[in-house]
Length: 190
Image (cartoon, rainbow, N blue to C red; front, side, top):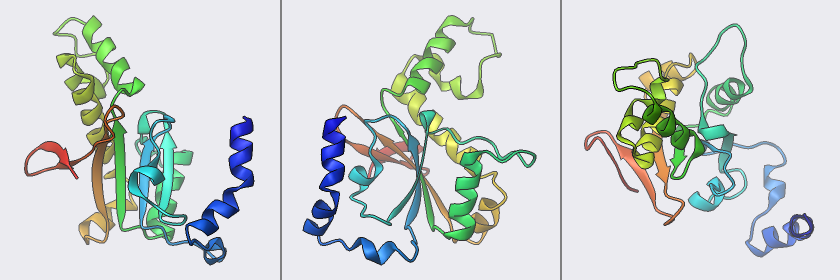
């Protein structure tokens, strides 16, 4: 804990050393993108993207999961997404999965224990039958884009092309970052 306290104490000096003026953000912010990722401590959106204060609006959840939009009870995640899309007018949403993700690994383990003809496992486990954690993690990341595309605030912005959805996959072992390319139907280097 002391390390975190020490870093917080010198934060202003570090910001000044990088030529950033936090006062510019005091009146509001217009982030470039909403970055949805896992809350895993190995995934650091600002470090990964080189973002400066005010560049990213972050939503971090267990497994980077985006719940389906429920009109009866808005979750904190749904409110964050709608605020980013409607109020902040972000032009891009990045759903970023990662290797060695517990959510994907759990899906693989669940799928491996079920008979091949058992269709009772969750949808996000479909690809996990291959026993490949990376493939399952990438498929899980794409499933988050599917969930996002069903949000009422997202639908018209996708239609008029003022909003773009991106699926990224971060390899925690190598630091490589891949982006899903629909034409290739694969995650390829950025």
